[in-house]
Length: 266
Image (cartoon, rainbow, N blue to C red; front, side):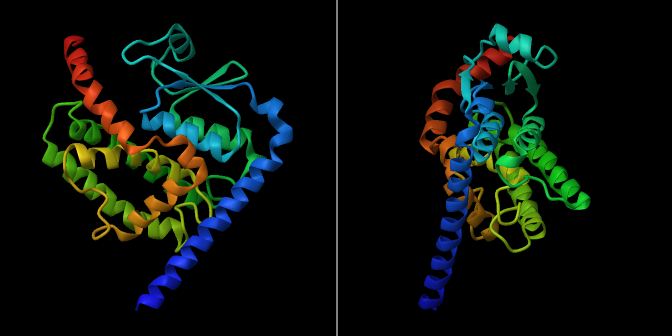
């Protein structure tokens, strides 16, 4: 049994090394296109999972970019001018033209730099629709529940934890269907749904510490737990995803004040 386990581990490591080699080769091939990618800025804050997903896709595509940090609780004039409708982060500025909403930005980057890396969405229309459905599901189920577990919002923490766990169990099934036995929701490569869900992993792991609970439990969602480790180990993700300790520190330092400010503004 031990030798079989070692063979599985060696096979998984070999697969990850192969993906990383391909990713690095793609980045090297893009070095001649720096002028095109230099004029890209992201308005946002590093703790935001929606900003993180934009940074991940830019990293996957090898796009040089600048993160323009927005101050906590203080929206800049540039942000207000770039996203006058929602006045929210993230905003991607490409040659000065703004694109808002994180999943729209992910698709824009995928299309604007299509030659830089494999497409994020599958070619089959039904498979594309399925990934978009699950990405919408992720953003419906995770953000509010995570804020409750952080203490950023009032709410029943047990109920919030149950909602996240139920969502993860559904996504375990979705991973089998979308990934078809491969490493990622996108198959052999990190794809659209990988980015949509994976951008929340930093906070999922942080609230496990903050609230002293277990959400991404390998005993209950083994395939998803293994996927999460692979996803976070990908170099484009590792470059964009802060360490869990930073999320915990940010929450303990800021969430109380942010909650009070939100209550006072109502």
